[in-house]
Amino acid sequence: MSRGNKDKKDWRKIFALLGNLSKNHKDVLVGMVGLSVFTGIRPFISVILMGMLVDVAYAGVEFSELLRYIAIGVGGIFLMAAAEGVLVMFFNRKLEYMQEIQAQPMNQKSMRMDYEYLEDSDIHEMRQKIERFGGWSLTARVLSCMNKILTAAVTVIMAVFVVVPMFIRSSHALSAGFVGSWLMSVLLIAAILALVFVEFKLGIYFHEKEADARKEMSGYEAKNKYYLDILSGCEKQKDLRICGQQQLYQREFGESAAGTKAVVDKMARFISLNVFSQRSISALTGFFVYAFAGLLACAGMISVGGVVTYAASILKFTEGMGRFVYVLSWLEGNVDFARDYMDYMALPQRKHEGCIPMEKRRDNRFSVEFDHVSFKYPGSDTYVIRDLNLKFEIGEKMAIVGRNGSGKTTFIKLLCRLYDVTEGCIKVNGIDIRKYDYAEYCDLFAVVFQDFQVFAFPLGENVAAGSAVDRARAIDALDRAGVGERYRALPDGLDTSIGKEFEENGVTFSGGEKQKIAIARAIYKDAPFVIMDEPTAALDPESECEVYAGFDRMVGNKTSIYISHRLASCRFCEDILVFDKGKVVQRGKHEELEQQEGLYKELWDAQAQYYA
Image 1 (cartoon, one colour):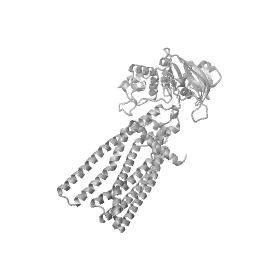
Image 2 (tube, one colour):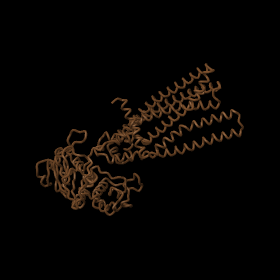
Image 3 (cartoon, rainbow, N blue to C red):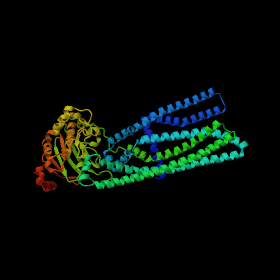
Image 4 (cartoon, rainbow, N blue to C red):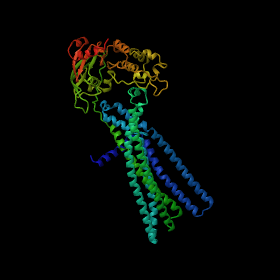
């Protein structure tokens, strides 16, 4: 694709962004256009009124008449300024809300998109680039730019409407009787146009440099945020202090800060040069404009008030052209961000959306079958799961063991349909799971992942995974997960906020307590399948023993799948699957597998020395 075609496509993203905004927030665009038109026209009305006032005063009207003109002029300017202030206030309020307007659909997209996108580093980087755009949201910046561009365009058009008729009339008069003055007028106009052209080119040059510097700055801003986040909490500082990494941190942060300063200095230099060139050209343009207007006045072609109107309108023309170039160049620097945002929002759904409702069984009996299932992650040629065939029924307690990278967690992701299989199919009650309604299928599973998350919400909402909390059921889940005693010591019970991010009275829980809360959430869901991926990794031995001892009480007659590296914890399971290189290489009870030569015995013997 050529550079020109790429630019054309990118600019379409800007208009697509505005198009999306107009679907639900037309008042914002209407307000922007109205403000642009009013702001562009208002100065000319003031200039024309001022010119008329000068002419009236120069004509020698009575003082009372002069006061009447002054009152009309001042009153008109005041009313227009007040109206513009109202429009500005309305538009700025909308701009402040743009962050939420942009974040809401983006967050909805993130929650609904295929899970594979969330683990794609390119998609992750795309979202990070959008989020670290800084300051206003992208939509607010684009709207602000469009407001300034439209204002500049209206200013230029109005200047043309005011100046051209006056120039035509004065040129005819000059050509008829003042050849020398006519030639002088042509030279002055040529000088003004030349200065406008120079300002145009310099504006493009400096803003391209500034845009490049801003892109470079975004990388440093991401690094600085990362380094500052390390110091924002105690967890990340444990390794920093114990391992003596302070000097490494200071070096890396120092280099990033130095890079930031260098880019800021570069941006400041370009901005200063741009301002200097603009003001210098503006001063020269003003000199030529007033010289030209004075020449016309001396020739009797325009009135004294006309000098004010004529000169001010030409200066507004040059000012509008300069602003148009400035903002257009600045907007161009946002094109890449608009492209990333629109491409992110346009990511297609690859996962097949089934429509068959899940069977509602009173006995909660479900059978699961992996039928010649193979899987490799998108963009990879390596199979993580290879020709997997197995069946299990509801009510069974299954443990999955194996070395790191053997496919254990991938097996769970496929079962929960975070990913779809590459080959073969997974069936529930004999039906391919891709044919089921996805939301209803997800309701089958309560999962505690190894990297579980407990959020800065009230304890009850964390357990219920929603704002509607069945308090008796939540308390029962906490008791069964072994954290009931801790709950009863809390001052606000289920209404206690977890963490102090948003509430001063929030409570900080230990890692083990958070893991128990995550287990309580799985119990509360009361789903037919309970899946636990290293559910006791953050627990002390006593708590781990407590969880194992109460496991039957926790899951009841549900199917439970338990992933662990600690083989001693697998002895309570009726069925143990041993994974190796994406295949189930052994299957059976602990007593059987312990006696067989194979991977399970190898892993058990390696760990047995640590068991009491």
